[in-house]
Image (cartoon, rainbow, N blue to C red; front, side, top):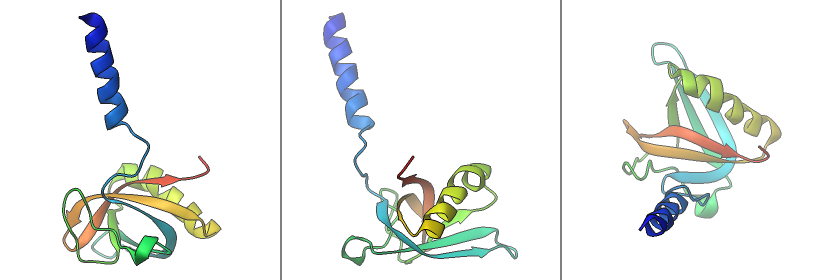
Length: 118
């Protein structure tokens, strides 16, 4: 019984922690970084060179109509860990994956990034 449970647990972990792209991921090169701090404290990001010119849609949390994704600069985790990686990707003009989940108004909300090399 313990062996069966261990095999089941291993399968669940493997399926839920797969390194493949998930809904809401979009890979491309940074086109525009637009900080808007006056009263909003928000950062807008758009990508270029995406597959089929796709735009982030905020999946799995929703379909957002904007071509820009958004992040809140008041989020300390975003400001300290994600924003610097976005700047590096823009500066080096290399591919980055934006991870979005849900919409903030019309904009997909950035919840993470994946950038190689790590």
